[in-house]
Length: 84
Image (cartoon, rainbow, N blue to C red; front, side, top):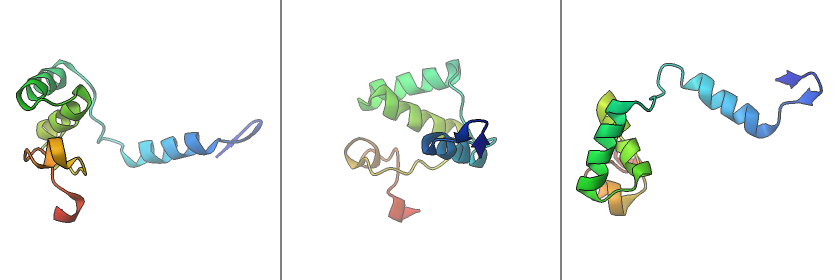
């Protein structure tokens, strides 16, 4: 990718590559996701960040893969990479 005044910075190129690979698979934050995430956060004592990942996975039928053993894997909210 080139700009008028030079090359696109590496971060912008990486974001563009990730975004183009995720077309149709990006979960928007909406009231439904926030409701599920809030319930999960309270029930499992998760951060809003972790609860949002779990909520997005559940709402879309995805398997959440994580190395966060203490909060996610040990509670059966995610699986380890080697388990997929």
